Length: 355
Ligand code: ADP
Image (cartoon, rainbow, N blue to C red; front, side, top):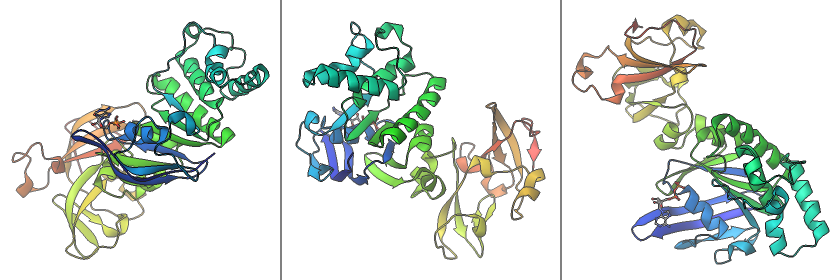
């Protein structure tokens, strides 16, 4: 087990800055997920830890040692990638033990390690199967077992579940959490899937355009996002944003007021201009207003599009109250729209006026 530390790591590829001055520390035994949109630098950051990429600037530490210039094999890390490359002509035992044979462990030690890893990933009884006799999930478990037998200080996992179908991904999520609990090894995990990040991680590191936006436990990123990017990226599918001005006890926006008491905002002063973010699940139909802790002002809207998702329905609302921000002026303005999430039994129709 080991701590991992990045100190002002920057990686440039000619004119692209893939990683921009990232400093962070992953504690010994911690599960930290790098999350962010495609191209934000997650893989490149992880590759600087693996030793597959050398930073242009900055330093990488594993445990107490600087490893910036060490080869991958000398870093005590094991990687699991999205593309599971098993040797097709080798059975599971041979695939899992391949790296150990290169390191000339004796046969007893190899068998002991492979059997123990197979037990952890629940592949006992399958060691003689060939890769084409395995399901996608089982193949991914072979890849994880191959990393486990090396007994690494740090696991580095780059979108390991990306090629699995949705149901299996959810199942493997719980398996990876169990694996982390059982092994207690430091894990750095890369994904663009925020559900994976939210459910598995001790902390998530949110990246955008190569820069670290926030590193914090998932619910802290959700409830106290460091900036607008994190607010929009973490959590519900689309955060509603509106520009507002702080008045006495309220934030006034073009279409509605938000009580300051209900908003998780840092210190504000009257007159401050701030952006309000409202999650779709925090927008309620007026009939339900009495379930709220505090009374809130209803707002006039017209339902536009309904998206039934099974367990919830996304309702796109057009805000209709403001004459000076009429929809005709700017039909695409996002501040004239509000996204609401309701339960499937809520009675709402398209083109309905609600207040
Ligand atoms: P992510 O993993 O978040 O999708 P990457 O770390 O793969 O992002 O890439 C970050 C940026 O660096 C992207 O703009 C990508 O095109 C660029 N990049 C990554 N690897 C290379 C490379 N070997 N050569 C040139 N550009 C690269």
